[in-house]
Amino acid sequence: MTGKDSPARRAIHLLVSVAMLFILGCLAGSGAARDAHADMPAKGLVYCSEASPAGFDEAQFTSSVEASAAGYTVYNRLVEFDRENGDIEPGLAESWERAADGLQYTFHLRRGVRFHTTKDFTPTREFNADDVVFTFERMRDPEHPFRRAYPVSFPYFRDLGLATNVQRVEALDPHTVRFTLARIDGPFMQKMAMPFASILSREYADKLLASGKASDINWHPVGTGPFVFREYTKDATISFDGNVDYWKPDVVKLKWLKFDITTDPAVRLQKLRAGECQVMSYPRPADIASIKTDARIRPMNQAGFNLGYLAYNTAKAPLDDVRVRRALDMSIDKHAILAAVYQGTGIVAINPMPPMQWGYDFGIRDAPFDPARAKALLAEAGHGDGLNLKLWAMPVSRPYNPNARLMAEMIQADWAKIGVQAQIVTYEMGEYVRRARNGEHDALLIGWSGDYGDPDDWLGVLLGCDSVKGSNFTKWCYKPYDDLIKQARETLDIDARTAQYSRAQQIFKEQVPFTPIAHAVVYQPVTRNVSGFRIDRFGMTRFWGVSIE
Image (cartoon, rainbow, N blue to C red; front, side, top):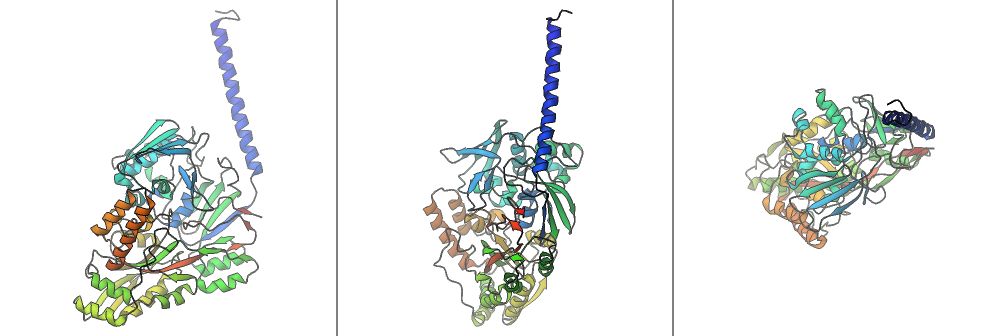
């Protein structure tokens, strides 16, 4: 037992060798991290954003505010939208395939990706299939332990029909995940690239669950994305560090990133001009001309893939009567609103999605602006003496509506001419959306920026029966319409889908669950020293590949 070639002696030598290799590996890893830190640019960027996020747990939210502050900052998804054209590209999945029957999708996961190390969490393993299964099972299974500990709703997962369509999410091995659907879902891959599908760490979730702090997943996020969450001061700032270990080269070019939450667009512009921030969201249309002449600023803009609209709560009388909705619709002077609110930075909306969306029916015409006919329709519906309604207006500027208060005042004046007295109501944005989802409103100014370039995102999410508790603020569930939307979703033939969506738009125009107002041009000015910034076609603000010169 004591000879130099004994099994015990050889075992000891082996253990020592393994230990030394482990130590050297750790030192090499820390050296690589130091080298990465050394290569990281010293400069950071301040973004003057327009609103506070309601949290950082992307699956809970549908607003671009949370998507910008979390989805495209802290997290990744299995697949991503290409910054240039919106096409699907690999993310945490390197490749995938769809079964011949269209009911199974198999994703092959990227190796070597690690979740962030934060003050609250240090990962002990790399990203794997368990994280994907946890992310989607929490949304899919009402009895999931984490969901029971932190019971929240998942509006996109429900509104997109995934809550009933995703039957199983299973790990075939540590680097392969298979989704099984009950029905074909034409835009399934596009949905997988949306912020709600951001991948969470199961290891971090287990730690929170064990410590009784499951809700911390909303306020102390951990992801695999290009920026590491550091701190949030409510209604003031969000601070991030550049992820030096990010898996995708050339994306992280900032040492740090800060969101300066500034709700007033005039103040945002002042800060941009003073160099207190380098990117700002959504200036006032009245300021566009001066921005274009400011040598310090690049007035970046593009046609908006968006829609600002006025939703009628069809679950409430008298708005459950289509004659009342038609009367309210045809009494609104859209062209006057376009001139005063958008000031040349938008076009009148006719359909429930923008003209650049495939499947748009260009043959549909708007109802004429006709206050006399509107008044007659109200009388026909039994409201010859007029109506009293509450008209909700958003408290912040959005890419689809730069000034909801002014728009509400103009609609209020238009409606007064036909005997409708409207009281303007507003709430803080998070409360505004929460109350609207609960159906507390009569009429509501709101809007939408396209999420994934498919008509289903507009016609299904905003108007389908599956989403009446979510983003369908009209609470309109009309079976002839809903059947068309579901049939279109369940086929892969583009021509057939286009025909179904055309008929759905015609039904929408007949039933008027909401009044489309405008499609806005999106402006996001930046200072001249910002490089690599692009306006995202899907309404988010992301800093992938952005640097300060």
